[in-house]
Image (tube, rainbow, N blue to C red; front, top):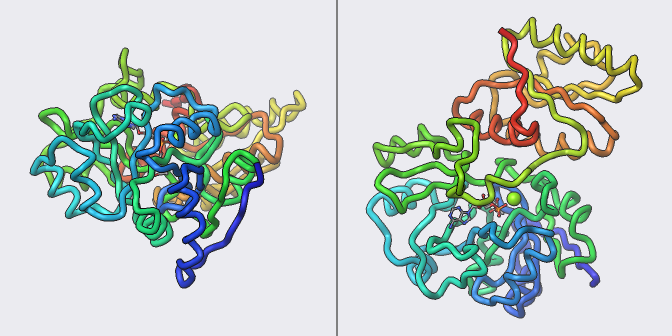
Length: 348
Ligand code: TXA
Ligand code: MG
């Protein structure tokens, strides 16, 4: 299949007519959102939804998020909308918050992996909103990476993974948030975060008064049947081994420098991802700035691109400085821990 690639500036949204028609016809279109690039299909077309799993190489029990452009698109998809949902929607949509509702019969089981719930969000990106609007249907979209690879934050990443597998790639530059949306389950008594992201627990708490982290996020262990089925799969991993190191900054530097020296002697290529201000402390051959110290939002924006850069460099080992699990730092650390297979070096 030939993949058509277009660059779209927000002043030329009329260019989206063709890809929107492709969505209506049941084809796959990769599009930008404020979080990461999505791989979109008409959510009401079962064959189109099935082809997402084939293109990604994704297990089909891992459900998809449905993207909408207007609040009127929500009602037909869900069984009901609780007061908490209304408040959260008013506060954070469009934005990087996915809400899990009881689903209506309109939503095909292919989207939900057979669950009786459905995950829905309204992305905060003019290109995404216009594409959905023009298509006139809700768009089911996972991140537009091949399964197991880091989520794409540039259209080039999508091209790398999906060229020849999908109809269109829409390029609108880099994604502002850089990590996938927060997934919040509203079907229980207390709003429960299944996947941390750009909308933080603190922000949700302010609106609903109550919020909790899914037990799988607290323990560092998956629950037996994860509520967010995607969380059980290996994710976000570059090809090299990721080693996250936490502790007093001096000790972290010492430990990484020592390990990297051993690597070098053994002919192992290692890379360090660290706060910009710390880079000069490392004696490692290749160091890359993660973002400014104390700015987890910069780290969120850069991390997946850096993982892909490490792949290009042929890095065998990737040492990463841990950051505090505060604000969006919780989401950054969640992705780092997953990439590291939960192996964290804690220096006391
Ligand atoms: O920011 C994002 O959310 C991006 C952009 C493209 O919108 N999308 C994204 O989709 O990250 P994906 O498929 O890579 O991740 C969807 C996550 C998975 O962890 C999945 O298990 C969870 O949402 N999910 C989907 N439906 C669910 C449901 N009914 N109940 C619980 N979790 C659900
Ligand atoms: Mg994904």
